[in-house]
Image (cartoon, rainbow, N blue to C red; front, side, top):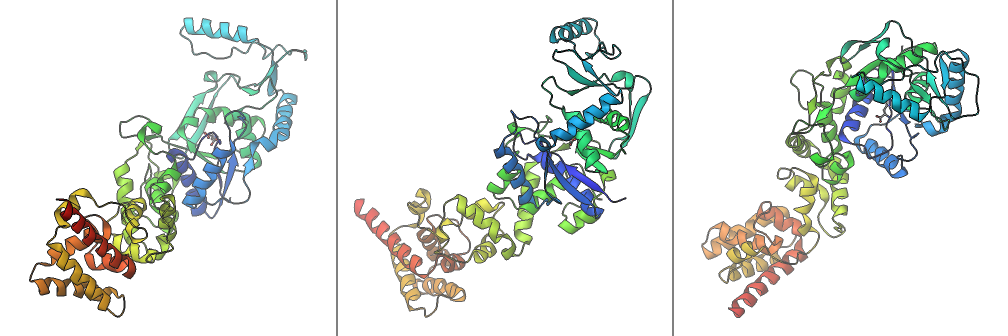
Length: 470
Ligand code: GLU
């Protein structure tokens, strides 16, 4: 049997961390088994579904590299098929029209609540065999009343629900539209899904869906319900916990593979391994090793993984991601060093690529002001001769070569018989506006010949201006 899994998001919001984890596990299971992974857009809730959400979900998946096989299936394009299946269920007595008014159902609920019973439909229209009347009605599935439904959940183990716990579910609303449980069943059946991997918020729907599948004579898929993800406060992960949309992490400077590696460990483990290449994930993934307990989201760990991959990646492999973060800061990259050189220099120092872009702006564009404290401490009249000396050595340098930069600092320090820091710190503030940067020779090299010259002159002017004022 070849494996076929699906991811079935409702386009009512962006792809959040929980949804991305579900998609990833479903994708990994398919890829591990050389099966197929398909995308189904559950867009039947027309009021809440938007094109923007759909786009955000597709963007999130493509950013992570969760590629799906074939074209996405849209539920809104399948209404005729749902109607056909509902008619089949009707003609085989597996479904019936229910004319119960809202008032009757509300009254029923009130009575049940007063008697401390679980609110459920009482089957009033089930056996009336009502002729079709010209009144609003819904169609309900005739759920078996005897026995139970048992399924072997790949995560939770054997789950049994008694049919007496389940009532007759509405499968078609009074406006003629099918409901969630019906559409999912028809689609899983038609798409020949072998493994349904989804959040455990759907586990209560599963026995109902199994009963409908059985009534249709369909083969049952295997189910795997993934435990929920909690925020650091132990509550279900939500917007309150910061960025939950995965593309927000792209904008915050995370590498897609770091996100994938973080997500795969949310509820799944393989020994005590923390870092996985894509192939390792695919090779080792199995639904049986998903833990039953809720997973908790830990921003610091995500950051640690991101930093690891920033350091471990070949600079060429993360250039595009860094470029994206620079673009969001409106930095023009046309005039400045190669991004691979920036990555080599800053890679050890940054937890995210956004941080790297922010800390590397001065390689590409001039800054407006010096950091006040850095300037006060370092841009003083005593620094002027050092800075002038540096300019003259740089001017005399035949080629702008990284290996020569160190020599310029040493020669200047020796010339004035001062420590290297006395030269390097004013120079650093002159070049970057701040007292912190990568090593001074690399900084000098990356700022480039023209900019370095101009900025050192600006710093001298700044010191003289400040001196004249006092
Ligand atoms: N559309 C459902 C959701 O977004 C998923 C349904 C399913 O996976 O069966 O929660």
